[in-house]
Image 1 (tube, rainbow, N blue to C red):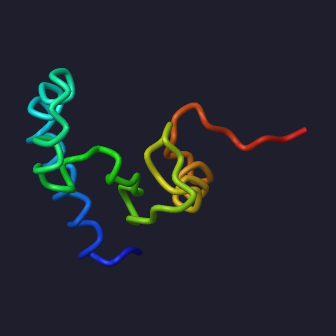
Image 2 (image 1 turned 180 degrees about the vertical axis):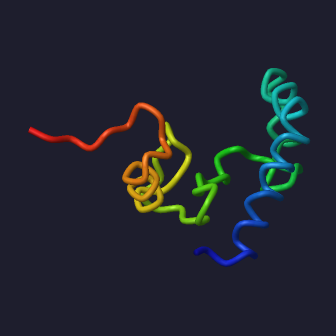
Length: 89
Protein backbone atom coordinates (compact mmCIF):
# COMPACT_ATOMS: atom_id res chain seq x y z
CA UNK A 1 0.00 0.00 0.00
CA UNK A 2 1.33 3.39 -0.97
CA UNK A 3 1.60 6.12 1.62
CA UNK A 4 -1.48 8.29 1.92
CA UNK A 5 0.64 11.38 1.26
CA UNK A 6 1.59 10.12 -2.22
CA UNK A 7 -2.03 9.33 -3.07
CA UNK A 8 -3.19 12.74 -1.84
CA UNK A 9 -0.41 14.46 -3.80
CA UNK A 10 -1.61 12.77 -6.98
CA UNK A 11 -5.20 13.88 -6.30
CA UNK A 12 -3.99 17.45 -5.86
CA UNK A 13 -2.07 17.27 -9.15
CA UNK A 14 -5.17 16.01 -10.99
CA UNK A 15 -7.22 18.90 -9.59
CA UNK A 16 -4.55 21.43 -10.63
CA UNK A 17 -4.36 19.99 -14.15
CA UNK A 18 -8.14 20.20 -14.49
CA UNK A 19 -8.18 23.76 -13.18
CA UNK A 20 -5.60 25.07 -15.67
CA UNK A 21 -6.50 22.89 -18.69
CA UNK A 22 -8.42 25.53 -20.63
CA UNK A 23 -5.92 28.28 -19.85
CA UNK A 24 -3.01 26.06 -20.94
CA UNK A 25 -4.79 25.25 -24.20
CA UNK A 26 -5.38 28.93 -24.93
CA UNK A 27 -1.79 29.88 -24.19
CA UNK A 28 -0.46 27.04 -26.33
CA UNK A 29 -2.73 28.04 -29.23
CA UNK A 30 -1.45 31.64 -29.02
CA UNK A 31 2.15 30.46 -28.70
CA UNK A 32 2.63 32.49 -25.52
CA UNK A 33 5.25 30.29 -23.87
CA UNK A 34 6.42 32.92 -21.40
CA UNK A 35 2.97 33.03 -19.79
CA UNK A 36 2.85 29.24 -19.93
CA UNK A 37 6.02 29.01 -17.83
CA UNK A 38 4.45 31.20 -15.16
CA UNK A 39 1.73 28.63 -14.48
CA UNK A 40 2.31 26.14 -11.64
CA UNK A 41 4.47 23.15 -12.49
CA UNK A 42 1.77 20.71 -11.47
CA UNK A 43 -0.59 22.26 -14.03
CA UNK A 44 1.14 20.21 -16.71
CA UNK A 45 -0.55 16.86 -17.40
CA UNK A 46 2.84 15.23 -17.93
CA UNK A 47 3.50 15.38 -14.20
CA UNK A 48 0.58 13.08 -13.34
CA UNK A 49 1.27 9.40 -12.78
CA UNK A 50 -1.08 6.46 -13.04
CA UNK A 51 -1.81 4.88 -9.68
CA UNK A 52 -3.80 1.83 -8.69
CA UNK A 53 -7.20 2.85 -7.32
CA UNK A 54 -7.08 0.16 -4.64
CA UNK A 55 -3.49 -0.07 -3.44
CA UNK A 56 -2.02 3.21 -4.70
CA UNK A 57 0.87 1.38 -6.38
CA UNK A 58 2.25 3.12 -9.46
CA UNK A 59 4.44 0.43 -10.98
CA UNK A 60 2.86 -2.40 -12.92
CA UNK A 61 -0.25 -0.32 -13.66
CA UNK A 62 -2.77 -1.75 -16.15
CA UNK A 63 -4.61 1.10 -17.86
CA UNK A 64 -7.50 -1.01 -19.09
CA UNK A 65 -8.46 -2.01 -15.56
CA UNK A 66 -7.11 0.96 -13.58
CA UNK A 67 -5.22 -1.16 -11.08
CA UNK A 68 -1.79 -2.67 -10.52
CA UNK A 69 -0.81 -6.13 -11.68
CA UNK A 70 -0.97 -7.52 -8.16
CA UNK A 71 -4.48 -6.24 -7.46
CA UNK A 72 -5.56 -7.31 -10.96
CA UNK A 73 -4.41 -10.85 -10.31
CA UNK A 74 -6.30 -11.04 -7.01
CA UNK A 75 -9.49 -9.60 -8.51
CA UNK A 76 -9.33 -11.86 -11.57
CA UNK A 77 -8.76 -14.95 -9.44
CA UNK A 78 -11.79 -14.21 -7.26
CA UNK A 79 -13.96 -13.48 -10.32
CA UNK A 80 -14.50 -9.79 -9.56
CA UNK A 81 -13.51 -8.65 -13.07
CA UNK A 82 -16.20 -9.48 -15.64
CA UNK A 83 -14.91 -11.13 -18.79
CA UNK A 84 -11.54 -12.08 -17.32
CA UNK A 85 -10.89 -15.80 -16.96
CA UNK A 86 -7.87 -17.84 -16.09
CA UNK A 87 -6.19 -19.31 -19.13
CA UNK A 88 -6.18 -23.09 -19.40
CA UNK A 89 -5.05 -25.35 -22.23
